[in-house]
Amino acid sequence: MRILIVRLGSLGDIVHTVPAQQYLAKRYPESEIHWLVEPPYDQLLNHVPNIEKIWKADTQRWRKHLTSLSAPRSLVRELRAQRFDLAIDFQGLVKSALLSRLSGAQRVAGYKRKWLREPLAAWFYTEPTQIEGGQRHHIEYLLDLADPPRFRGQVSADMPLAIPAEVSRYIEEHLERLHVKDPILLNPGAGWDTKKWPAERFAQLGQMVQERLGIPVIITYGPAEQDLVDLIQERTFPDPLKACPTDLLQLAALCRKSRLMVAGDTGPLHLAVALGLPTVALLGPALPWRTGPFSQSDVIIQHERPCPNPYKRSCREHFCMDIPVEQVFTGITQRLGL
Image (cartoon, rainbow, N blue to C red):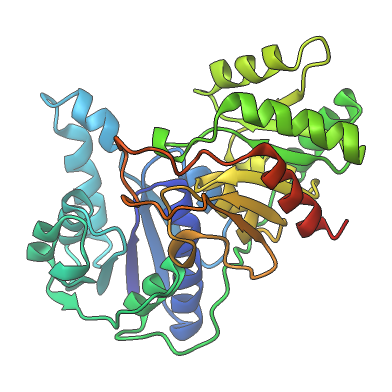
């Protein structure tokens, strides 16, 4: 049996889909599981067990070069040659549903219209799947799609990840150069502006942690977030907080060398949770039962007023990330048992 998982992005969603992939591998031990994903997330999935092959769909590049269809045509042709028995669209967008159908799989499964962010995606499924509702975590809903209408097994957010030795060594050497051991990670970036905690508050928090607790702090960031880090370091001059740029695998290795992460509802937060790193989550426009840390030991901090527009990229009433620095600091001491 050949199964194609279609989950193109983003980082947090991919991390949340891995438990469903691992369950499918356990349920169908003789199967071949393939995964269709957008770059750069293939870098991470290449080191997750029980995936036969990673296929890349560079949809952003396709949109930039609409006059050339050679790349998507070639991908579809190669996917069809695999003769998949089942494709499961864990994303629920029109683009992911279309790719699932174009894969040539005999059966194409996805959520029914009411559960989809883009209801038109249901047109491409041969098996629109009904699942049970309720206030459950995103990971559980993804497992439901792998075993509908409701997954009854033991749910875990853990992601098995075999980090290459050279990646771990790179992080160890970087921390040595910074003279840092067992740091607290501050991740100020986020895909949406509504999920960002102000940079100046990250700066205040980092200084507070180092001065009051004597624990080193590292700012983690990706390629497009240098300006954000510069702002934090300017606010902490003349002793700027130290920073560590990483790709996805390097971030995973850094998580395994750290004691805690503070972040919003972002991919790095979900990766940290999946790798067992304690976290303090700043959840403004996110529902804690849906996308908060899966571990009950982790600390969730929200504004005292409920967010009126959860999961919106823009909001006129954006007060929900107005969280005091002292409250986050207290969350850190609580999670570390200090």
